[in-house]
Image (cartoon, rainbow, N blue to C red; front, side, top):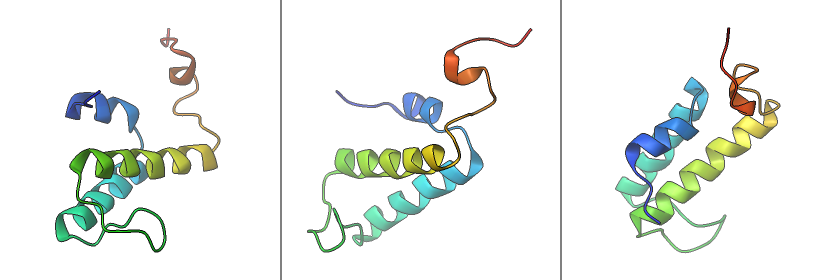
Length: 78
């Protein structure tokens, strides 16, 4: 399943996560992104997006996974 840019932006909400995704995509475009520590260079853009979302998700889990309290549960404010 292809992930659209809009869907990717919905999954990434914090500025630090957006910066991490931008860093990973820059590495991919420069040909420096590896799958794993010593793995082969990533050549598939879908794999690069998957790595970027995975690393951004690890950042979210490290901060407790809360975005703004209600957003995680799908509730609206009010």
